[in-house]
Image (cartoon, rainbow, N blue to C red; front, top):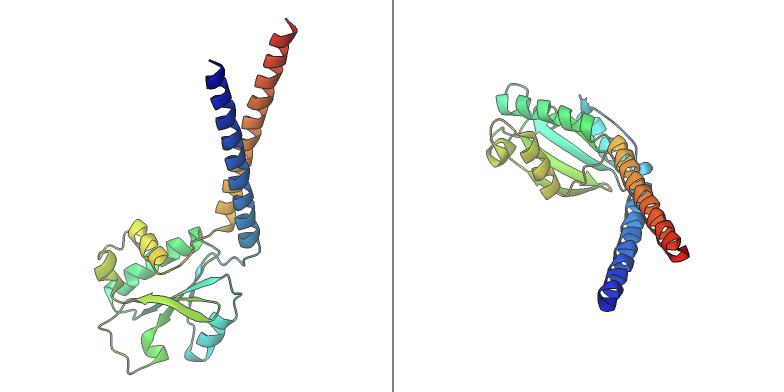
Length: 191
């Protein structure tokens, strides 16, 4: 029985250490994302003259997702609707939809819709014929998965603060439970 109590104490210490380490990691992540700009929508009408500045004007931790499209292609229109949803949800990612023929009138449409991901002024990755990769209906969860595969960290200022609040609340509850258990134990010692 004594060995069992010793084992339980060791496990409690291990989990306390793990929780503290995890809390510290989440706080560091929250600090990084707290300073990111927020956008909350998709940018349309970026011209060839504005394209480079649109990407290069962001800090090194901001992901920029460009959708190259033509507005007469149904799959491009569907992708724009989904990207608008994601832009509202993940407001720390900068999304833009750029008409391909406005950038380069010699580029064909056979690879559209195309997503290009930038970070720190560099191309991270890209994907052509997104509709064939995730399905014509452009399911939101599959689009999120594709963006993650392309290297995008989907972040939101409000999601991070909610996650932090929830973690902090659980941590406080656990500490209160631990304190209550200690006080009960000291009450037992007095009897």
